[in-house]
Image: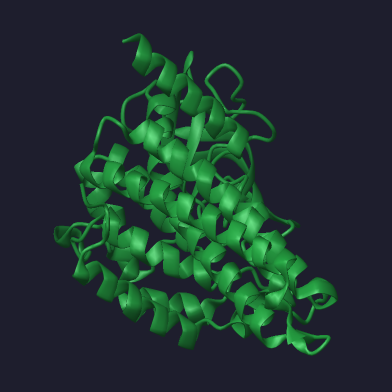
Length: 371
């Protein structure tokens, strides 16, 4: 079986890379990092909207491009390479997928076209702090028409106009759609390791909301959404890991010590080789996940978990060893290595830490073998 992208998808990736390298250099990322009052790069976001990328996997009847999640995977990898400081992941991986999976035809017709146009920026609010949110421990409640409670941290919660929220309803959990610009919503920006991917605390006080899907299906729908998001996040992490390896390799070729490139030293060679191996393992698992999520395969839960675990490990290791390869320069503010390390650590806990996904993978395999 050939899991590789098609020629058209590779062309899309190449064009996206040219565009992002031109419109989103590291200086665009640092504009957000260096300004506490800026949560994302609005200029880059506007250009992403104009490119139509938000509608990549949105059907044509809703104004989208009518492509699929494979094309989103291609774009996600390129966004990861440049550490794009925009609410792309929250809107595309989580919010849009939640609407496609759980939204009614009326809800989709109302919101999806506004995502494509950029009028709606989405986020996904499940977490209420440490621990896995379930119907048993959720404190945010939905009474059928209004939402009350606190969600923290919410990725891009200070930027978003709308949110999909996991809330307790009766004895179960449900997904609800909330307009964050409406009444009953208070937001506070949080400080994180990576300010270029903003987070917020959102407090709901009888905020008007509408249910997505059926009452009590929240946990099941949340699992499905996270499986989709995990694969897309894995491609973004893969892009960051690939770029970190390239940075380390380029520096090892250019930096001379004692009259020779440092890349000629065995210790540096081993670092680069191990980075490459981990990246390739992640790429294989990402392709498996891409196949599963794009075809709706029964193997999606295990494929998503494997992609998530491998990509977290690859990006963290590559970003760490990139700093080490650069030596004393790698730890400085002026060199871009720390930007990749920040993003690697942050993405590793978005949608659940690797430990959560390892447990999920084990459970999935155990249930599969017991069947």
